[in-house]
Length: 233
Image (cartoon, rainbow, N blue to C red; front, side, top):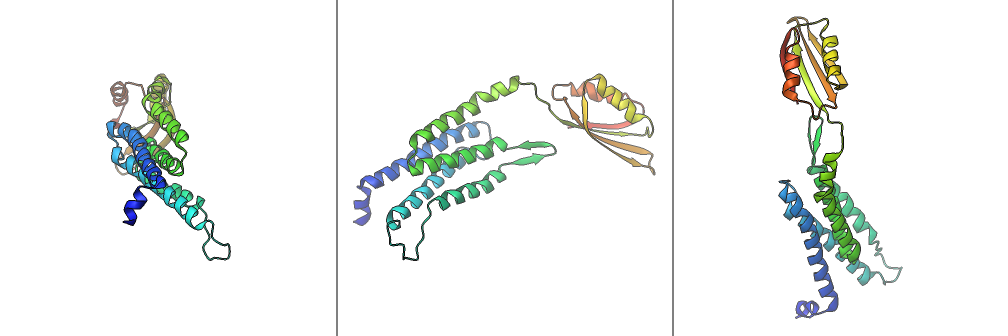
């Protein structure tokens, strides 16, 4: 049978090896994402690497089969177009992994992993095994080791403070003095005054508030004159 004869060919075995290697490398990175409870985990990364590898193999096959044809034919082959479309397609998949909650953005690392895994699949599909292995090692080191290094860095962290008060005159100055005492910077400031109810609502984006004691900050703000409600995110 034709398919059985093709299975015994050297090229077919190479193709099968590439598919298995791409699945393995993509699955390794996916395991790390799965262990951290990310929606795009083991299976997603494995399938992305496998699909990218298969598309590169198909592109290579078309080039080998039709690339030597006469230039007078209608067929025009450009194997690089397949790789370009893989990059575009994985962008949509990565965008689905990103979630924005207020000023916080989650899923960027997972989206980057999907992008890297697609590149791994493409590299393996075209036969670049050593670069694919090196990228896998670097990616795993960055996910498993560098995250601990990031925790040692002093980074600005942002929080949003919402305050509702009946003090329509001097509250802004009092609140500003309180935050300066705590060495907290105001990045953005917005105020809404309801004259019918005699209430002012302040929304402040605070910087350098990542390690501050939120309960103590809330208690201090509540202690200001006229405060009805306080919330910090």
